[in-house]
Amino acid sequence: MIPDTLSAGQYNTVYNFLSLVIASQLFAALFMLIALPRILPRYRQAITIAIIVCGIAAYHYFRIFDSFKAAFVTDSIGGTGTYTQAVGEGFNEGYRYVDWFLTVPLLLVELIAVLALARSVSRRLMMQLVPAAALMIALGYPGEISGDNGIRAIFGLLSTIPFLFILYVLFVQLGKSLERQPVSVRKTLSRLRFLLLLSWGVYPIAYLLPLLNIAGSDAWVFKQVGYSVADILAKAVYGLIIFYVARRKSFEDDAAFAAIEESKDEAPALR
Image (cartoon, rainbow, N blue to C red; front, side):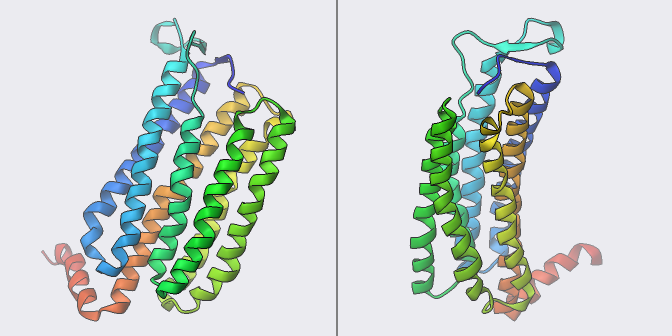
């Protein structure tokens, strides 16, 4: 439930975190785009997907940012007073779900792509994970927009089913594939699954707040901050880790390429 009023501190907290997400997604995408030639072509698909994910997130956060500024206004000079909901305006939480519906499946495709598994194995994993991720988000949305806690609980429970299936595939089926990855990235890839679990864990906590009778402006601000931090971790930070894995695997695959790249890294120190 969107609060009727926000204090200046609450408004500025949400404003600043939304701004932080936009900057994080844009510059992570820019870095990966510039650095794309510094990995082998076979891993560039994973990084291209990471760039797309960050781009989609940045676009939707621009929309969320504009929606937030339109939804809460103040008559005080310098914006130091109370912010109230503007007449005829509302904060559109739906932008987040459109973003997640697109990006959550792509995050899983990112991980599969950087593993560079056999085509049949990659196809099987994507056929399992992508529909489950889309279904998880689609089932969560009706509960998010409902003011009825019973409906919210039902759809929250339904969306948990594909979520548990995704965890099973990530930690059981995909875990077997990690044994065939280079030793230098094996631990990083294993921890990457926990980063997804950690960041995704914020969403159900925020989803459950109304069911726990935790409401009001403080709860709403906490939810917006939690979503923002989770999106930075699950998209920008996750994408940069995927880039690190792709670069390490490029070095493992091609010693000549590794020598050229390492010489570029050392060149500024020699001058």
